[in-house]
Length: 88
Ligand SMILES: [Zn+2]
Image (cartoon, rainbow, N blue to C red; front, side):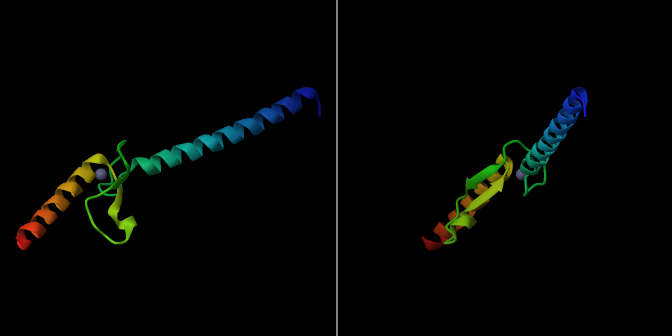
């Protein structure tokens, strides 16, 4: 194998590695961009502590977009209001 072929072969390998790396990155970002609650593509998705008192700590966290989180928070705020007004 001559020098030129060797370079081409190495370039091809690098190119393959790069594109598989890019494909991985794309599928990773697509996965995290989809809100599990509304199914829409959002850029505000993260794990947030919600207003619940589950003994299982993991259940107190939801992964969703900001809008779904706000909606959930409103829902829980309503639930707690009912809970406290029942006890008064
Ligand atoms: Zn959402």
